[in-house]
Image 1 (cartoon, rainbow, N blue to C red):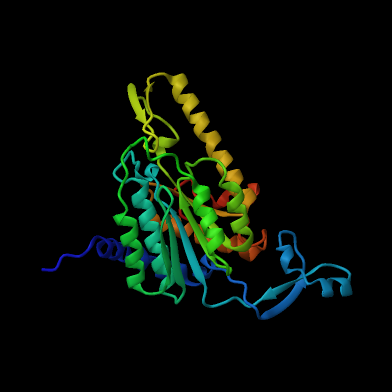
Image 2: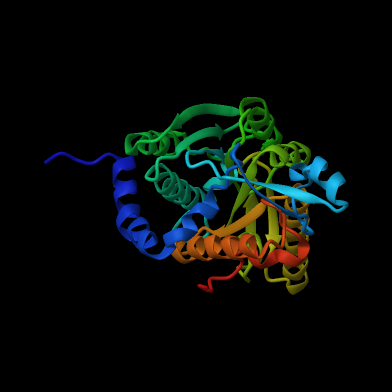
Length: 323
């Protein structure tokens, strides 16, 4: 009997447990994952708050005396790029699954969902620098190649020479590589050195960017486990902390919430939609709810394409409710 490879086993599992069910539930909402800006002019309409100012037709605006925007026919064939952070902190997991396993699953589901409809998927993979570039492709075999890259990268253990994550290196590489407008999925736990915000905002000005934020519940709140050694897997630094101290646990939770708020504000200012996934979240309801919220916001015309405002935090999947 021929044994299936790890990528094949992963993809078949997801095809049965997630993709088959998504096919029957998404229906027309799939297209909200990939929004294009075709060259064919479809209509002109009055400017609404939140519209992209780059689509204003200045000749019509001058003639009629109030702003009008161009509406284009959407491209049917688009490219999507996955910017994937596989730094050492993604190997952490307080439960049965590390963040890296959830990242691999969501990348596989999105890639297969996109390629099955004739669109192309490429990837830039970061691991102490941009380690691999997968050119865009459309086949199931191409998705298996992506999974092979994600599953074959050595899972780092704590080591002092690994150094902190520099997410700006991945974003700089994407800004240099991606010339034509496309959909971009930035997948990371965003535990990085500062400096990634500016290249992220630059990327979002030219592309439709979705941030996929992976986290572990233990990173937000510590239980009472007594004296506990904590090690930074990227620098090797070890601290001994007393989790029995309620003041310490409260301070930890406060700092974690503060860090999350800064992250959300940074992504909102950059104009990114945000999908948050815990390492043990059920992927199907999370993806379904995100797509439907994104579709509903787009139909309402509340924001320009790709934007997230502080009032629109419904796109943050911090709970497990299914719409």
